[in-house]
Image (cartoon, rainbow, N blue to C red):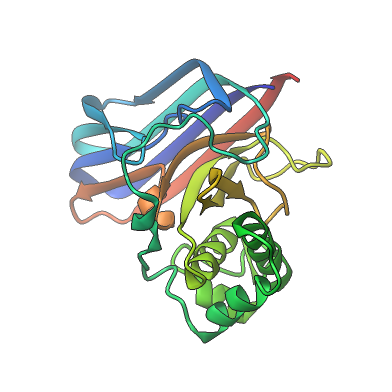
Length: 270
């Protein structure tokens, strides 16, 4: 499948800021499941800084905008050819050991309920692959997809207690439940073209990857109850949503910040 992406993020400030600095993780991952045809990232009025590929294999680029800054617009435009690998991250080069992803964060802190969910989900599973699938299914059943009920700082434990959440909450819960049974797991940010039945979906998306020793990293999207396929574009990963955020930055000044994000994803060829 060939997917085109147009993604515009605009930060506005109610008072001019002295400067703004952005760290962008907005570049498609290099692995057998996707090939970049064209891709351009730009910051209006910005100066491109250094770029590097981190230990997890993600491309990161720095930008700065000199003040006075009243608005920062980050634009992404490109085209990617994807292949369905049943969620397996095959051919992805990275240096970080999977064991590094057994660390907890505030968002993925394991409380008694998450511990129980993970432990109960894997009872009777024959191997690690089945364990991972069972955990993803248990999270999908325990947390109903409902936009607007959680926020950016909601933890996996809070979403589980609420019983509702969005893709970020599902990913955090899978990560926590997997770690509860000793399986490394991480958060992934990217794009999703549509749900499996073709229903339009929020294009900016997130899911989890669980490491299975005999196979490697495998993606699980509890929000759509599937593994990532040709409808997904993978950008980057981290211990949680904060670490894997496509855009991270700071602005110097006293102005209050507002944010607008518009993402359009279209299938050109299937």
